[in-house]
Image (cartoon, rainbow, N blue to C red):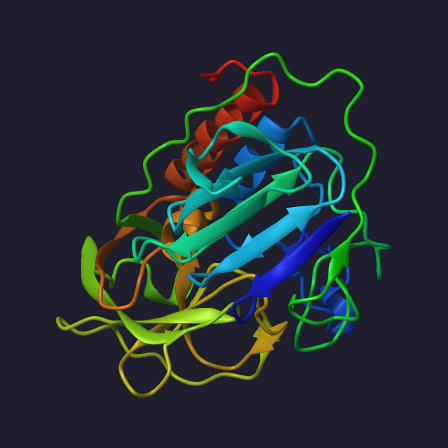
Amino acid sequence: MINIIKAGPLITIQDGGRHGLRHLGVTTAGAMDTTAFEAANAVAGNRQSLAALEIPPVSLELTTDTQVDLAYSGPAHVIHCDSQGQSQPWYPNWRHSLRPGQRLKLSPTGQGMYGYLAVAGGVEIAPQLGSAATDLQAGIGGIHGLALQAGDQLPVGSPPTHPPRHRGVRVPDYGTALRFIAATAFRGEVPAHFDCQLSSDVSRMGVRLRCPDGLPQGHSSSSVGVFAGAIQLPPDGTAIILTADCQTTGGYPLLGYLARADLPKLVQLVPGQRCRLYAVTPAQAATALKEHQYWRYQIERGLYAS
């Protein structure tokens, strides 16, 4: 059992998401940064979609009743383990053991928006609509559909019989270059790239970008189905890129869709940070996704081990 001693706002339990239900108005939810989420699970010895803690840039403290193996991945926190009056740093993308009497402390770095803490065996939460992912808007998943708070106790699943031989993995650099596929209505009309800056209007539903050089303007249309990565153009001249908790339909003009492989880069940008949107072809976006899937295949088998 993992005991939550201190929890900042909006720490949730997330897994691979709630798929196949968007036609019913059910959001996907799941991890915002799938790269860090899958890396943490791989190091812990879990399946890549097993439930873990998603931690925004806030503090978290926890203890355990029994020894557990944990792994953290993501740029958003520094981690220390307090034991008998001494504090030892824990390194990201590396497996560590937490014992009874020790306290794990996570503090924000200011360099990213999400970190993931995976426990060997996963956080054992009964699935709702096929997933343990917390959807705060619908109030489903996780613990009663709520963010974690002090006093919560998280049951842990059975650890893997054969833990991975590697204790760490290498995670690719995030960067600020974001590729997108232009919608049919805008193909041939968009420049090669847009320089943008992340506004303070960010959430698990989406992020808003301000682009000083201007964005093309489309005409409002009837609502259409949308999913994470959709780049909407509201009338205020900004761009909204939808993320994990986004609605299932939208009526704003669509500039296009962010390449799926670059969604983890987008969600780790901090307010005020600059980025560049590059227009690419569907074939180029597919190649980027294949490269990302190859990395997933490698870490699952410990081939990018440390």
